[in-house]
Image: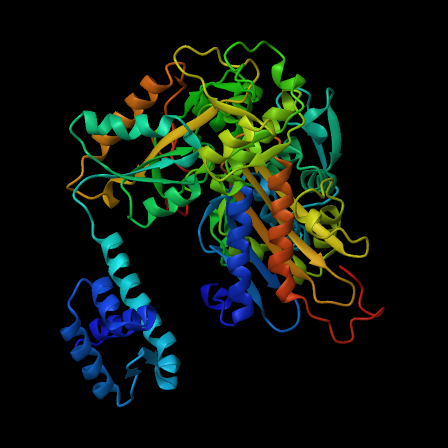
Length: 315
Length: 314
């Protein structure tokens, strides 16, 4: 017998305490459900329900077995869900750091507009880097600085930010605003990218702000803090915005696996390029300074003087 | 090294997990090795068999080579060394930051090289020992010559060249730019002086096993190291002795040290880090090096039987 299917019957009847209602919940008719329960009872060798004129009551044995049955059903659901996660889609799987706020939709829209539909993931940068290393996503936009050992990272894109105040007077900010702000700054959770977070706090203090921050899990949480007057926000300056002088920028990098670890069916570079172009378009004030493609050092003018070159840095 | 380091007991395995978490929280890649120098063997390691560019840590095996040569009678520790104002390697500390000619003994050059990581003295000691002799001695110890691939002048010249800077100061400024990723061959173990964390542990074990007066000069200089913000920050105890040598270049921050709690076996601990952040002042990373050292040394602490007043602390 199909045990999982019959345990689903068991759970449904236990929930509904009524064969007709349980059958409706399961999207079937009552006779096969009743037969199914009887088959399960025979299979298990115990009676699960008492039926009488007043309805259906679960037996002591049934109550005893119910938790184990639910655990099996949950396990089966988890297995199916995990398999679905592991099934590799043919589209590029793109990760975007959750800390990018309003830039997130634009970044996903750009590859699609170029005929490169992608499977999106939004998460903290550290998590995205782990997913890249595990081969579970193909390209990601992460906050810089962060540890990107074993991956190929593009140049740093520097996105100017503007201060967002409770009264919405973000655009018309003036110099020294950060220093005069007594409110904490609403920021993403530190664990999303600890070194970038620490760098931001240092920069706030450098600008004369207290460096006090409130960590909020997502954009909505940060907007709520700002709206409630509990914090100020720091958001990427849009095309019509004046960046707040002295405010620390958002630094980003497009990161991918080393060429030898990429899925051959995906054009990683095209996706990375689309993401870079999207960043430039969404944050027109963004700057890219200098270029360094990977952890590979520049060619040395003189060869090493001792022994053969050792292995590459641990990655 | 692998066999010695392979964590077999669950406590040690748990420590490795905590080392990883600490490194992640500080935003660094970390290579860690700790080993008991006396008593029953014991070690803790995180990626301690991977070669890493060691920056000024080359001065540590160089000092051991110098002391070995002195004890063999090949070098005179009192021989005078003249460091003219022009031509000596510049640097932020010691003779390297002075203005006028300095005349000192070879062993004092060793002490300044270790206590304040003096670059001028480092290159002077390298000249006394010679690269060939240093490599021969390292080979005799089963260590790779790459540990002392070059001196401070060559390292500085390479960084200036890689960054296309006009001066060493400008090169360091470029390496510290938060808005771009600037690489140098001196981050790469294939080009820089390089060692694994475990190999630096062997260097400390050799140094602590030697009985010569010159080796005592070296150990004593390490006890006078000017900085306690890295490994030392993990052991803020006045009765715990610390012998250390740091190495720093751009995103690299290292220290190799011997930690000794009273009446316990000394433990060598090597923490090598490469920070994600480029800035020159990262107190959080220095403190993380102390935390990594404390975590690695913890499971190796062991009372030394009979280690009372009779045993001289080294």
